[in-house]
Image (cartoon, rainbow, N blue to C red; front, side, top):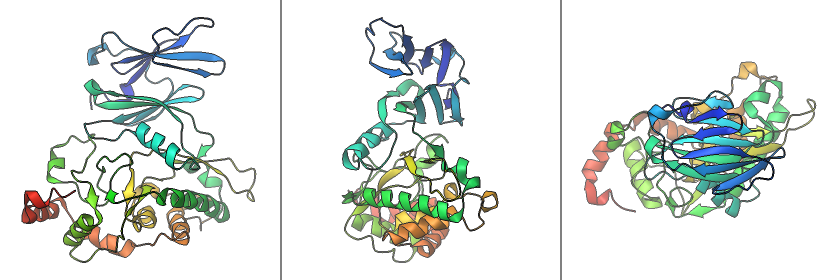
Length: 350
């Protein structure tokens, strides 16, 4: 990814930032009119505006201090705190990816009781293959941060809240395994990366090329796993499959008897409509959900198991043994074999 994600934003002067190739953020002096601003926001008695450049920057034009305000970074995703209560998130983008902004707006309209970050503005920087999302900073602390201070009772209380929010989301259904706005799902949670994915660079999102029906996904999972897959039912259920401890924010407990309140669930890049048994199964299969037991205040505070327990208590059936067997045998080569056997016309069912 060029330039790296952590070079997407640069502070060029006090109250002024470059946002990728297309945008500039500037503080608006008191009494001045925000002429030509695409949008404005107020934070701590100051007003800021977002402006589109007349001439896009190039990679050679990168300028500014990119480390100021940077609170999370890797080679293809980064997050900045621009002002005390405003966050800008950078994700890789290719054609066909559903924007997190669209997902957040959809959730706010369809499941308003689920606490998420408030999305303010978003755009695609096609020259640099990334999308920018401006949003309000969420209250609380990451679960990962408070984890060493929690006992099992507190962890169960948090997991119960998360499971209840998952149930609210899971009541939203679709006849297709798809993203919130109808885009194809991304990632390899259910199906291995296809042949075409081998040609992608490491930072590129892997987008499936079908909106899977129940019948179609059942057929593929059964063929790839060499045994019948668990019953999917008649519809798919909406779920954020990346509710890892870094994506859950909670209040700071005053003591060991207080259960923290879940204040926000963030990072909806992997949210989609999935089989009902997928909800309680993912926490035990994805390393992202694991918190080191040895750092917990209570050795029984195993986050992955407790979250799965609470999801099962909400009625989301666990199918871990099957999916472990499935993952042990399904491969890109196996996917290639299945697609070649059924032919291109069969593979295009939607």
